[in-house]
Every structure is written in C-alpha cells, then in structure tokens.
Image (cartoon, rainbow, N blue to C red; front, side, top):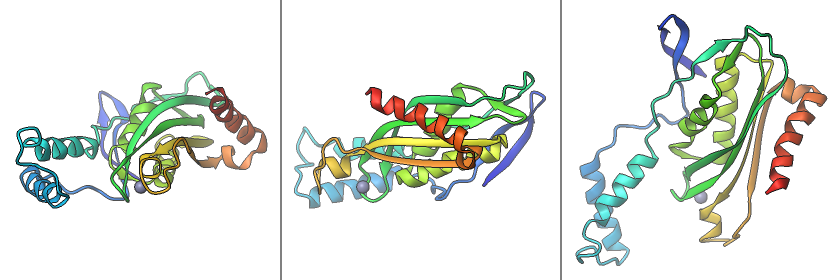
Length: 213
Ligand code: ZN
C-alpha cells in the first residue's frame, strides 16, 4: 500500500514515504479550469460578467485546486525504545474533505489510534496523515480505510484503528436536507480488530468523545 521514495534522510531510515493513494491526481491546469468554470457558472445562469462576479471563476478554481492538492507528506517514525505497549489514541483531529460525488465539503473529526510495535509515530504526524488523505476528492469510507492501512504499512504496529465522524453538506444542504446527521465510519486492524479488550478500549475512547459533544 505504501511505497518508499527516499529511505535515508538525516540517518533516519524511512523518514519520508510517499503513500500510494487510490486516485493519484493529474497535474492541475488552472487556465483550462478557469475557462470551464466560467462556462459552467454562465450556463447555471449566474451573471459572471458583472463586476461582483467577474473574478468568481478564478476564485472558484483556486479554492478547489487548494482543497484538492495534498500537502507534502512526512511521516517520521521513532524507535519505541521505551517499549511503550498501551494504546496511543489521538482524538478529535479536524477533518475536511470533498465528497467525490458532489464536490461538496464534508467536515468532522477523526480519532486515530494504534498499539505500538517497534516504531512509534511523531504525535503531530497523526493530523498530517489525516490531512494528506483528506485533501482530495474522497469518500468517508475510503478515507477511513486509507488512513488505517497507511498506519499498518508504515508502523507495522500490533494494531491500528480509525474512526471518523463527519457531516456531509451534500446531504445537509441539498437532497435529503438531513441537517445535523453525522456519518460514522471505522476501520480496525490487528489487535484493535481481533482482541475484544483492546477493541473495546479503543472504541470506548472514541465513543466517549462522541458522547461528550
Ligand atoms: Zn456527496
């Protein structure tokens, strides 16, 4: 699932990895996109020749290009020298992504945990990992699976789990207009999936968070 592009940086083995993702984006063509955006907005009946909306196609394209361009990825790991053998859970990581069916935002939080083996992940890298997989056209289901599989590949932990709770504006602002409906997805691997005690501990940590809101 994950492929290494440079494995020796500052003496750290595997400091930089380029995760393989499901749909690798092609390069952005801003000029072509702006023209197409102007055509689409005009076809939708919007007065894009007016002073107020003249710049809108350009702004729209730049906003989408930003939301669809993943950041640089660095998932530095460290040796688990202390032999830490309990769950590590980082909860309430903000998530925002674009649903690939409507290109409307879905936003919420991710809870990411793992049971360390020989390597541990820098704590700030959890949020970066979530952002890397989120900043593209996604489904919440795939996003959840990709983050969990990445942790398994990158850290080779005894187990890993990801729970994402999000509100989809394609469901709240249009269509069903189910305002406030939250979609919860989970992906569990290794001991977090197979060992009932570890699984229950991880899920209770994430459920307690959900109940607290
Ligand atoms: Zn959608």
